[in-house]
Length: 382
Image 1 (cartoon, one colour):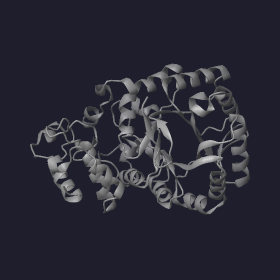
Image 2 (cartoon, one colour):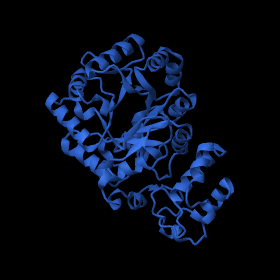
Image 3 (cartoon, one colour):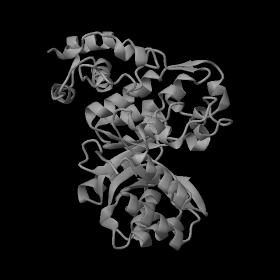
Image 4 (cartoon, one colour):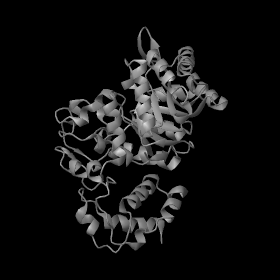
């Protein structure tokens, strides 16, 4: 298992993480077997959006004696009422729900306190200026939560939260179909058939800017809906018109700026082990470039996908990484010091480009790489 820094939180999390939905309706014995498989595979990050009290209690028992081996991403504002899930902003419910969660998990703290499901700018303003954020900040000050997170599907709401400086971790829906869609407050539009009826070209610029801003500001991203609720794995259900594999979806998400981990949800032990097996899968099984290039009605022409097909460069340049650094500066209109430092330690940079064009011949998306190298040389200098 590979581990990544989660932004500036100081946490190191496994690239493959686990959403808790698959734990629901499982017996305590089954939940324990799931946690056993996670520990064995090196998965250390578990997301806990589901407020089902039975699941939380079973997970707490499964973590007994090994709690310190896991990073818990627990949610505020998601509660269990009248036998079902409810999202709330009522402080009394938020406090009661979170305290009950800690009790059931048999712990006095969680590493990430995730403010649940903020999908509109108006909701973000309400959260930011209201009791929910005050409560989250008080929990962080006491050490009950290590850092504050927020989950969202809307890049505009997410961007406002990231720029506020109040949020350390963003849980966001990242996959190659949702990334084409413009910002909106109706989450259903992300998978609605009519959203994909016309030809779509390249990533939505607000989503790309969000990922790059998170990278610049040190806000770590944990990914939800990498498989689009499973739709992307089915040729008949996928908005792209073709099925992707589990490994392709995971790899796409992990190559976005600021992404540290992908919640690879699972309802069986076999599915858990399949997600973990991404780490040792051959590169060709992870490669999404050819699949993306063949999607009907969707085109990424001219857009670097950081897929690595441009390699190997005869001069040893990591073209995808140089391009990622360049895009970070273009998005900000300046060169962030952290980006400049990371670029400076590269063994080979844009100044080494001899414009041979070998990379462009291999690029499935017809990116004008040599022009990007010239721009990078102008931006970063020799």
